[in-house]
Image 1 (tube, rainbow, N blue to C red):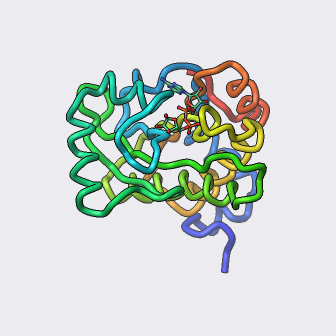
Image 2 (cartoon, rainbow, N blue to C red):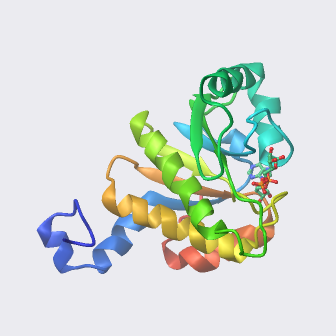
Length: 200
Ligand code: AR6
């Protein structure tokens, strides 16, 4: 089995150069506020209650308005809380995006609680939900690196790896934006994504 499914055979001849080119077109790095992004979906770093909180979650609910919380309540009534690594989708209310995908990152516990796998699942499950909802442009915040205390460099490496892996087997997502609110995360991502990051 090919490690790069869905690529035409001719592209495989030039692997990994081809991957480099594809990623160049499909991943971008943004320094700023995710609530301002006019895309099909933005991702929220939520908690399992889905009832809002601080950080990016607080900003999304505050600016998006009560319609987001109303849908979250309906989801919780239907399926219970959202477990770490899983994702749900709601309206984006008054935000410029069409949808908010809420995912629950792991709380950092010194690396002893499978945090990397759980964090990778946040990215993978958010992208799966995006594909199911015909989302082709999506932005991620730096999940778990605020209140949940995940070391930023480790989190960025896991995020880029999980997204890159997903994009290699999916062609429907056209653009993934990594949105860094703080300078430290931005420089970390710049180093990891390197020369194929596109500044807006
Ligand atoms: N746009 C983009 N990124 C942002 C924004 C914004 N407007 N605001 C903050 N960030 P955090 P967590 C960045 O704490 O660590 C909440 O209370 C921030 O700089 O929002 O996953 C939830 O309800 C950081 O890099 O999320 C949970 O209880 C990143 O977003 C808990 O926090 C994530 O920081 C989740 O903690």
